[in-house]
Structure formats: C-alpha cells, structure tokens
Length: 214
Image (cartoon, rainbow, N blue to C red; front, side):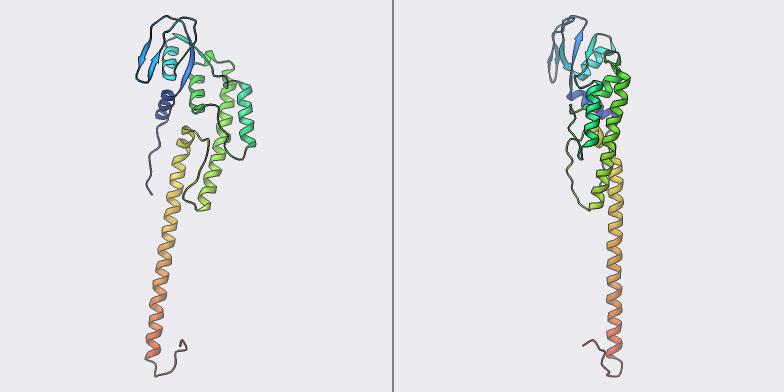
C-alpha cells in the first residue's frame, strides 16, 4: 500500500492562512494593496476592513492594526461547540473551515486583541481532544470492518493530517496480515493436493484392492 507523507503543520497553517480572511482595524492610512488573489484596501485608520489572514498577521506583528476576533471565538461559543461535539455521534460542523488553525494562530499571534485568551486556549484544546478521540474510534471501526472506503464529514485538514500517519501504518499492517493469511491458505491447499495425489498413487499400486474413494 502506498504511503503519502503528511503535510508539515506549517504547510497546513500556510494553506489555511491563504484561504481565510479576517477583520482588522488599521492604525495607519494607505492605498490599495494589489495581491494575486484580489485587491485589499484602501486602509484608513480606525476603519475596519477584511483582509487575508496572512496580511492581518503581518500587520499585527508589526503593530499596524488591531485584530477583530471572529464572533465564534468566545468562551460561550467554544463551550457550546465542545458540549455539542461530546453529545453528537458523528463529527459536527465547525464554525469555520479552518477553525482550529485560525483560532490557534489568533491566540498565539494576537492574544492581546482577544478577550479571555487563556480560557479560549483551554476550551480549544478540549474541542480538539474530543474530536481526536472520536476520530481514533472511527479509524478503529473502519479497520475492523474490512471496508476499503469510508466517508467522514466535517473533518478539517489539520485533523486529517494528525491522524493520517496512524491510519497509514494501521492499514499497512492489516494488508501485511491479509497477504500472509492468503499465502498460508495457498500453501495449505498445495500440500493437501500433493498428499491426495500420493494416496491415489499408492492405492492404484496396492494389489487391486479398492481404495474406497470411488
């Protein structure tokens, strides 16, 4: 079975930063920023605008703006997300397609702009742990089922990246065991065939007495 190297966490983060945008409040005035994926700006001090996540992080690290946290990045919302995930049999839809990466980046690089940052970090880890436990159980059930394909909804890229090495090793081991079992069965069949031929040959040369097989 072919094994694909998982993306480095930094690569997953880069993809998320490129695909997400965020509201900021700049503290400077400037014109339009021309980017490959679209124009951003103009920038006016004190006037909120949405920019790609990587632009927001770059400006925040240079203290050129204040980040406006998403409305789901509050203790109340994360507690509700955690509790719903615990109660649900299957994975629930997260409020953003890059929920974990976006929240993690904001709590690392813009914690001063996010209320209750420390509590949010704990709640975010709670949600992650609940979903990782559910994902491991799903992988176990999939392997034991013997199926070749499975559909899992509402997983995020960073979650699949975390479980992929374990899944690959597990499926490789299952494949090795199945191959060994098939070889063993084939060998047993060959041995039985050879032994049967010997019996028939012995009976035909045994003085004309019936072998009892006909």
